[in-house]
Amino acid sequence: MNVKTMMLGTALVVAAGQPLPALAAADTVAAMLKGYEAAGAGPFDAARGQQMWTREHADAKTGGRISCATCHHADLSRGGSHYRTGKPIEPMSPRVTPSRLTDPDKVEKWFLRNCKATLGRVCTPQEKGDFLVFIQGQ
Image (cartoon, helix red, strand yellow):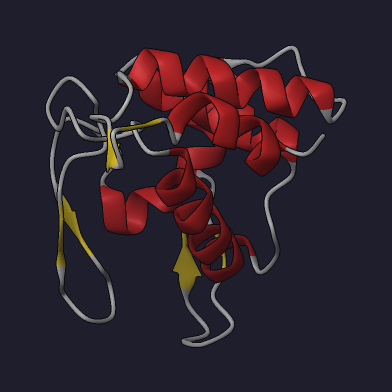
């Protein structure tokens, strides 16, 4: 069973043809972590997630350096902006932006896009789990 299959049973509940409100971030993260564990990842470490958040990588498009914090900010309670387009990004902290980490499909979509853009590759289940426990604690 992959993470997306597991998430379908947890988050995409439908009643009377209407989607239910998104799960709380803690519930979504817990379900996603179980999926990553089923894929062989864990234990997850917030400190490792924080280190990855600020670690700089070569940006193939600009030749400069980039990290998650480049756009999202090192302080997850503050908003950021995309470093190339300037588009504003709401704070990553679920305490500040309650809708963060509530939709597993969106979380996976942004992992795919942002890991490729920042790391130059897809994030591993271990990295995703470490990021989630870091972000969830902010």
